[in-house]
Length: 535
Image (cartoon, rainbow, N blue to C red; front, side, top):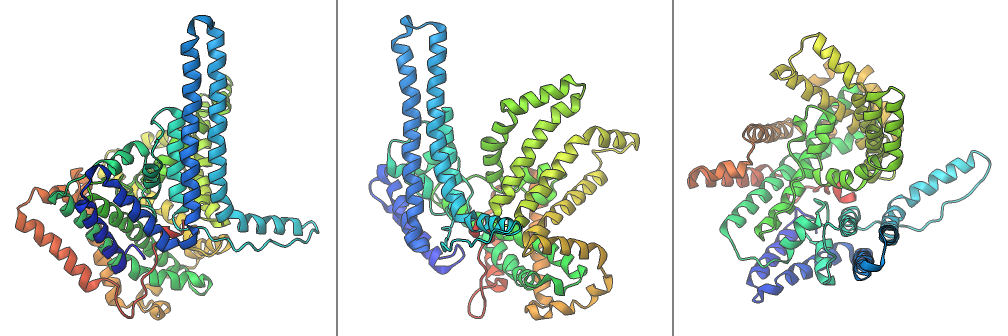
């Protein structure tokens, strides 16, 4: 039951209808719970056991962590007069140690499940390969592991909640079924966005009444997502899969074209899927976090990662980057460098190193292959080097009297960042790290403009000139909408709401008609899965 399918839309419509017709508003959230678990059971069958295990351990872990903290505070309060300042400090430290132990158990167990299911095969093959080089011949156990859909998303979301309970930012949820809904909310379970408990949970539990504005805004967002997926992403996917299946058969010109096409396809596919998820939730009065903010308009790679897959970036920044960069070893490293007259290095290097570690994790999160680790390493190294070299680049820019606020410099910065992002995409679409490096090499040294006149090698893709025109025009629509949003600081829905009603509905109906006419669906088509469903 894919996100872009008749079955899914019928299922969602039925859930929305039951949700608003449910007579007991106080327990309206139970409709969402039943729908979420039914949906996950339909798409994952017996593998639903994994999300159940995560839900149970998350529930118990959060309660235990909170109980340990409350017990320590209560003991200090009840015996305040008999405890010295040192005694209170010692008890607090002991309590925190116990809380850390409880938290660590939950994190290790759940991330251990994720790591085992996604990375055991890769790690075992790598270990066997390394041992084989020293004469030890071993075989990889054949466990036939299959990671359930959305496991990364619900694991990250659940563990973020437990960490927030540990930090005292939220109270542990006493109702197991309510927590189960937070973990499994069906519009987001497949590919996000990753929800923060303090922002999402209360929306799931609060009673809702039907509102026309919610329905209109949700349907617009949903339609916009379907347009991006069916009109652009699924067309482009046919070319990309054809070229990357055996990239050695293609010259650099076609490789560059494919990577550019992938940039359009990936954004249309992933942001389109998120729009569908957010649209369905919004119809029910639930606002999920924005996951994309016009990433290809970024002027630096750091800005790009603040605009792309925002929920994952925020999660890693809050729960990985900051804990690493503010840890005692990293703070000590910075102080040591500053004491040795390396003021800039002491200020920047620990943060840059923490950023590099975070990006390697991002790469590994994308998949159990060396090419994904290289993807993370590439992004991390670029950001690290740019941070370390900032005084030098600033000096060069000033000496050349370049106005960094000018439109030309802004355009140059966007193009430079886009090229850096494209290099990372080579690792994403290649079958292996070796293929990615080969593709990059041929893109530079085997590029021939004459190839652009025929595109003979791509005729077997089934994508003709008309399809390329549709992809181009679809991208032009997204670009125009993005420019308007970037300049106004408002969403298109907000801007349209300021227009007269006939104008609004003319735009809405045009979007639906264009998708219906030019979308890739129906008999004879092979809808492609959402790229991020595999994560």
